Length: 312
Image (cartoon, rainbow, N blue to C red; front, side, top):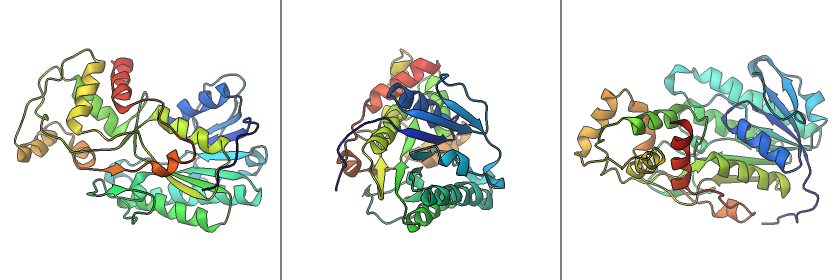
């Protein structure tokens, strides 16, 4: 794969969804590296004074991206509705995650700008997979959310524009919501937990590593590629809890339980969605993203420990 040599690193970067989980980590990092950032969000933003902040309306109503894209070298599209189960209609996922993304991509394409589209591993696979996935693996999207992301990928690639697609695995870190927040709540329970024999393997992604991957793709001028991004090595569900409890200064406190009883335990804790999303195997290869200069800046173990030490 051809990788453009590094030259002047400074870029004008338009970041959508800048007040979201990943955006709140990405924007300060870009500023620290000398990039000029235009941060776009529906919510009030609190970034360094050098960051130009722009409030916009609902993506589903249509946004005039031309004035913003015109002043950028590269667009990082983070804005989306994250997977939230069956409470979000498929049509809403489609409007926000596909149509709004493609509308922005068309404007960027017309202006000759690069677009980094943050998709999801859900565009490629169901919550569990028996194989180690790479970018060439068959796409079997997970539900309406995954389908909306995959269709957005396909339409963006079909524009023939300068683009990169990122498929992150489950991203965790300070400010994470959804299943990661529920897992943190589980780790905090001051009682032994019956998950010691859950030795499945999951590829996770620390938000610090996600930011590192985006920065590499911005600064090395990568184009017309799709990349899976994850931490260096997968981890079992049991060891997720072990590392989180280390962050709390606690012992593991796990014991064995017959597997058929575990799903019921999650149900009693009103955490069935965590079981569905984290109890099976889902491992990926990061060989391709590594080939263009990505290297994790933090291990999964350190990231999970840090997460609980930060939020406890």
